[in-house]
Amino acid sequence: MRSRSGAALLLMAFCFLLVGLIALRWELVSLVIPMAMIMYLAFLLHRPPLMDVRLTRTLDSERVQEGDVVEVTLALENRGEGLDYIEVFDSLPPGAAVTEGRERFPLSLEKGQSATLRYKLRFDRRGSFSFGELTVRWSDPTQMVVREQRIYAEGRIVVLPRIQDLRRCGLEPATLKNQSGSISSSSIGPGTEFYCLREYVLGDELRKVNWKATGKRDRMIVNDYESERSGDVVILVDARTSISDQGVRQRMVDLEVDAAASLASYFLKHRDRVGVLVLGDTMEVVPLGYGKRHFYRAMDRLLVTKPGSVRQANFLASVMERYFPTSSLIVAITPMEDRRLVSSLVGMGGKGHDVFVLSLDTFPLEQAQTRDATAKEVAELMHRLRRKDLLAELGRYCRAVDWDPRVPLFKYLMEGRASGVRRR
Image (cartoon, rainbow, N blue to C red; front, side):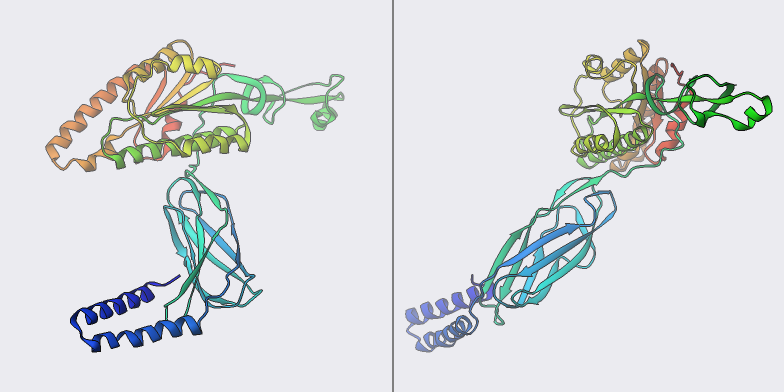
């Protein structure tokens, strides 16, 4: 394989030869001789080696959050001829930035020698990323001859949305199931919160015996606890919008995905069953499930969420009845641009469903696009009036809060928890 310098020298020699022959200027033709000697000596003295480099790429973590740093380790082993000077180029995933080290390494490898290279990447964007080919390039000192070997080593990293701390939000399902969880119930059963004392009954576990009370009353006394159970939660992500600016559309969806991921993590840690329903250009459903594996299953679907166009959503009630129990807590994350979706949520709330609406206010995201102060003021007034009417309509049957993306999410969840009526 010839390098650019070799190709340029060859082209220059051909031009001198052609012009010299046409103009009958032999001094121009004679200039071809030293160029030909340089190329001949380059090929003669520096024979391209047989390259056989093996690669192993490892990552210190395959799942990270936005903004986290990942260390990439490249282990190279030369099984071919000795390489006096090579350059190693690693192709980075899109959106990755090198924070420490570099993705281009000059080094030499003798036959059988190994080398370990390291660098660190930061991912500021959610998604699933794959590493491409690694290129090992050898060249002679004159840069006339170049040989490359492309090596593919599988490497995939999943960048999750940033999970916010929602421990203080207190949002929980109103209807609880028999499965054990972390929500205190008014009934007696397995749990950690003390409920009352009672006399020992044959079959009670000895670990429930209150020995201090037993000694005082001269009979066996045991502790009873409030049972801790779990519920079902459905997180609805409405990624549809009529905003024309692509950057604002993507920012809106990123905020909704971050909120959905934080809520899914919160409820799953409380051992609730969680399902996800995404409305975009298509509808995607993640059935109810438990545990860390189900969290990653839901994240895989949320990571590919893209902005969609506003279409009718009058099918929402039938979809919810088909895929999820009617006793589920429905957490709807929506900009409320689709009036039919609002009507569907009102209808489900009127039928007794537990509905919590987290309405994302998109005006703070769009206001930078409007430069006319008067037009911005009028647009904001109309926007606020419209949202006030919709929230008032939702508030009659659902718990609804107006989410300003500039304020931490848990404050709105604390605001919306008080209006719920718990059903056991």
